Image 1: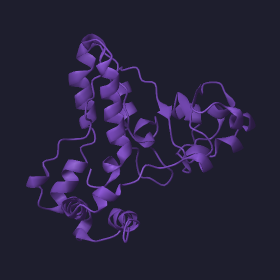
Image 2: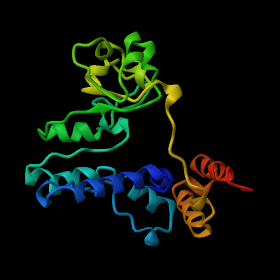
Image 3: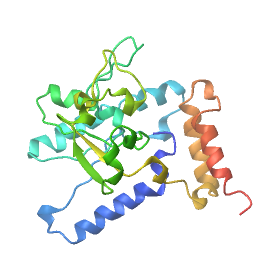
Length: 230
């Protein structure tokens, strides 16, 4: 992706954690990490259209699963944005539904178990005893109060037709109240690296019609500005 999402420290920490776990496991039990986004060669991208064509190939992860997971009769933990893992992508006002990753897999008969991990929903307001749950907690949704709630209370958007949470996901991961959530941020070393900032701004410009500033570009500059003068 052209934006900074994969450059925050939490993702490097994830790979280091997998490496540490694998160091204690025999080869046949070690975790294997597969990259799901398309392998963009940014050196060959010259126009906005070329960038969009590559970025739009988010279905590449399905090809990876079909080639590297299913033939080996293995399980995969997919780490993607919650919207990719829902079962209905027909939002109110949209002209048509867009198949999600879960839709594509289930249409092929692949069994999926989808977990909602969004941390912006104030779940304690939906069910009072949630405030006393251990952190983290994973709860099944089928035939529960949370599961029967309209999905819009979690996503902030209405589906068309309206759907319940249990129609969209199998479980919810609770990470604590919204006020307790912290976010992984870009580091001072990255923001002070002229080569990195030049590369990142150039890629974001290619991904924006006309190379216009705004959106991701402004947010990137704002985040790095926090380190100015330190």
